[in-house]
Length: 296
Length: 249
Image (cartoon, rainbow over all chains, first blue to last red; front, side, top):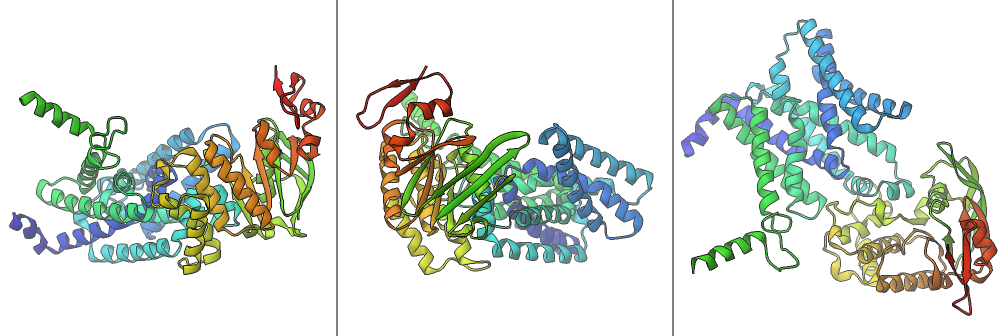
């Protein structure tokens, strides 16, 4: 068993993959927590899909694809806001059309420009293909964003909990909003290699909502989410190595399994284990009780 | 003193408020009453700049209110809060100290004492580690009351604090209002409630897009004023020596 775990670690590319997996596994859940509490998970998915045309254009022009991706992602949020302000089209429909259109444009450009970009890796992740430079870049972004979250923690807490109250106190709400949007886009762009744009939303919100069912405070959601993000990412590395599947889907399936576990068995919120106030029992308790009585 | 002069709000084609002017002195609990859609919430939001005002001036102690927002505690309607947010009672009340603490610093010992004091004052000290979603409506309102107290503001704006709360919480609320009044604070409380509770206020402002009447509860709650604010189908039913209670048909 131990050999099974240790054997891949002899390869540098595996060590890089695990390193980037750990970093992404911390970064995505922490930043994604702000998507969860503001009910903006859908927007996270929109940004993730909208990075593609920027990526294609940047590659074609020879500039850093992550910069192109970042601009494209942020631009999509402006397009959505513009559609909503200029017409009676509502947020959900505006988002749906915008993200699919940006995504389609990206795929088209990549094909037409005959880019040597590997579409599969961009869409679904290629954690085994990361270089040491990629790890270094991800480490820098992760450290910077974690420091910013720590520095602005109490202001972001207030703002995301009670926007009106924060605004009423004179908080710079626009700066906080755009700052969060930029942080989310940067997180998505940085995580593309690990989990891919199509599925990055799962790593952004999955560990967070699992933690949300288990703990009471925002910072606890972030910490526990990060731990689960690490578990999911490392599982993705091993799945990629042994099963030869893309890392993204593997990470997502582990994330969902953890969520399902919390959904069913959380001591306070789990469907089977939460205390039923009327009966002072839990579903699973009553089941075990009935089995015991049946055996007598 | 709070001075509102000619406040008008035309929001997306709707005339929400029209030339509203009034003053509120310190050591007063002023009730802002009127039917649903009268603009009570809009008035408070426009005063704080949360909703754009078409025209008007709002001053507190002779200076623009929006230049000194930290001196004003705004307690929004409970329906506007996400009660599933992962945070505890203590953390919510501590949010009031965010501005005082300043950027990049952690709350001081003094802030912690102020928060503890506020929690004890409203009677929710033993709930301080509860996640806010586990509280009853009345307890949730008291959390926000504690938050407003912890801010140590001079002016308090309460948006429908009495909606959907139990009797005990209502008593605590009015008790705290009275304490804040004796400390020299200025309080504006909006309510769509009727009846006995209105006698708790020193002054009433009856609003329906415009300021229909202002004065003591007896002066404001006349049949004529109420008909003006609420429309024609109103009949009086004298139940109380001090004030007629009116019913709608």
